[in-house]
Image (tube, rainbow, N blue to C red; front, side):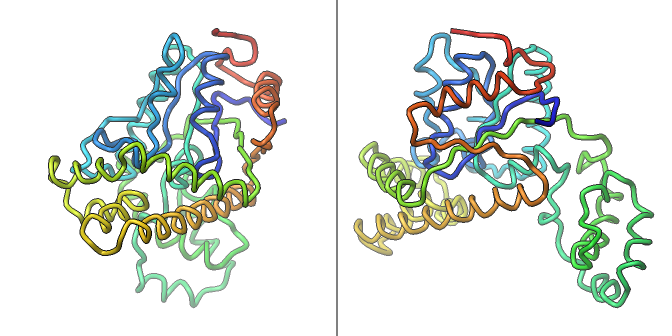
Length: 322
């Protein structure tokens, strides 16, 4: 397999068991977890975002974690700010010489491990696009090559559409290089581990998890966000999925049964989008080693695979922490 790797990323669709797997591996092989979840950064969010801190504290010593509970939900953490915090968290763990486990399924946050910026965050330049679309691919590539390699390296040079988009973005990146923190290569070199569930079984897990979260008090959590923490309904809707649908139910848009039905469908659709994104990552050259999460030997297979990997600056391959 390629390498060397300096970290491990546990990914999979929602409800696939990523956090439990990451905690078990961190306990056995040592190290701490960096969350790649867009909602777990907020202190006031717990049940609805699947923070599952009980999984971290179930082990002795407890599993250390970063990028969880770092901001108030009333202060929006934008992607660029999160990327800076990711770099700080990663550097701290590397300095402490501990194994680094990334865990999460938010596609923009997963992309932050391999792309120094997210192009979708930069708005279209329609006037510039109109001019560029009149050029040949060779003419476009000639313009593209005038920009630094840290901008052009990941561009699909066979696609006119993508080269045009790159040329829209490149001047913005050059003008704001410090802001986008793209002047130096990213330090993350993760070994990607994917947890796979067949569709029908994943749907069953999604439904069972939703029932469990409702029984744990997810609706009460959202009510508290609205009435105690004064989180506007618009903000909860922006947070999506559990927070959106629970807020709409509380506001009287639909009854409890409709809430469950709508939320189950929305989470299933989200899981489908996640799998589409993982396939997109693979098409872009990311090697994801998938493991069948149904099997009793899944954990042992993953542990053995990690131990056999070409890992650098980590004790994963040789160390144990029980």
